[in-house]
Length: 153
Image (cartoon, rainbow, N blue to C red; front, side, top):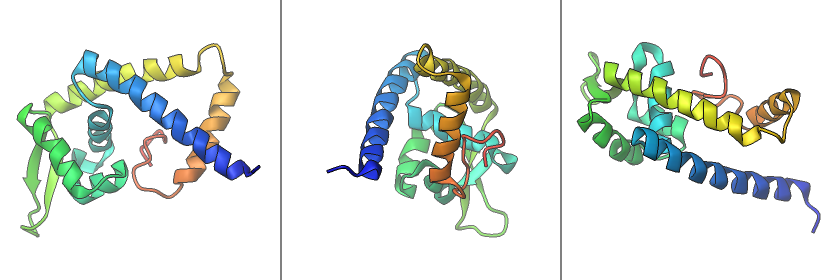
């Protein structure tokens, strides 16, 4: 079977698993956070008023709202995020990045940036990395909260 799309997807899935494993270990040892927790904090940092509903966070993280609830609970106990009710709709609550969360996400993002650079070191040129980022960006084009964009999409 010679289906380039199939092989491309298999390679993307393998690369994703490898990167998640590599990043999770280092983020956990340096910052005490899982990769998805850092991504959650990054989404909040880039959001207007540094807050998002659990549903919006779920869409950005490709998880269910209940997963966001489970992820946010320990971060809330650590003081990294808080809860904020909507003034107009009592059923709606937001996850809000705290000052402590802002500091942590800044440090964790610096760690991620260093780790990202090491992924491509000695294998790729800057134009190749930019081309890859552009090509991968097409897969999530139009998706809310693209962290791969300088402004968060």
